[in-house]
Length: 412
Ligand SMILES: *Cc1c(COP(=O)(O)O)cnc(C)c1O
Image (cartoon, rainbow, N blue to C red; front, top):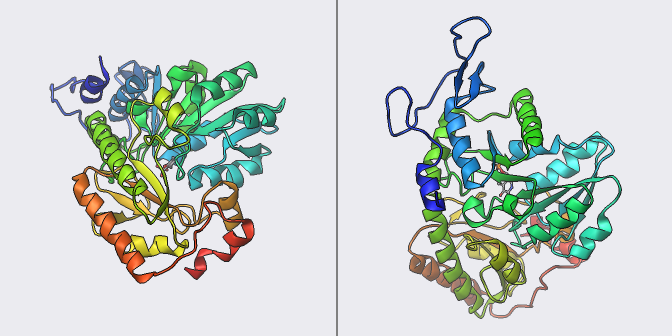
């Protein structure tokens, strides 16, 4: 089956009992057994207790796995629960190399959760393969890649990283949330595990918190499933139903997200008040060549900076009409955020500086509206900011640590 067909018809078999075309929500905590110790089975999985197995979840997992071209798909209660279960593959004494720029919650898992378990973490600029090679130690067990990264949209070459990792017997894990299995399939490029926040594009309607892990390795799948079960990081049947429903339009949505985002990125790039746009679909983007090789579309996320001081970002956000000012992404409605004061505010100014996140950066999740409305809205909002500000000083893309501290967002 091809991608669009898989997304629509996927693995969700019709309801075996009634033939209903919408897979039922098995809202149950447990299952009776026909005889002691002989549980019933569904799609090869035995139905003992609903934390371990649920048919609605299995139907979703089957579709997700097939979309990733993976043997195993595991649905979670959140993206961070999925990620945390994968991090349980690490043991005390291990060393892990992590993308420098990444989702702040993942950053916190590395810096505040697993660091307490005797695991050493190094944040490395993984777009620089020499930096990766230099960071490898005999104890390095895993490389954690987020591409495209959140929020600077840096593109890491998955095949190159996975090849280097394989030579050293390290696992490559890719957080592919921004790309979805429609635009990028890391397992086909040599990654061992792929994770997603399904809260974002996969569900796509901003009404569920959910996560996914996919892999072709049965040993890893068993270990991750065991952690999920025993840590209790399981999604509800209702959430699985909603994500499975969203999945049916994922391929179609990603096409339109990508189309709208490219147009918006081009308009912004041409705007005299915009200092820099990050979108892997732009010819000018440093990640463009790698993105063309490993993605079949460039997605719906665009980040940019205005030429004025970081506080102009806040002014702009407050002048928009068609973008929800909110912390999330990947839904049908366009959303906009200022990472330094919103999604990444849990990081210190120094940590943001180290991960290459400028205080003036604005991150957009371009939705499925008519792009002309979005373009007009951004245009009028930018004009309003610079009608007020008659002159401005150019702010460097990455402020010095001192400047980052000075621009501490409390002042904004
Ligand atoms: C949102 C997000 C996560 C965390 O997922 P939740 O579903 O919010 O737990 C992880 N990685 C990336 C890239 C994200 O955007």
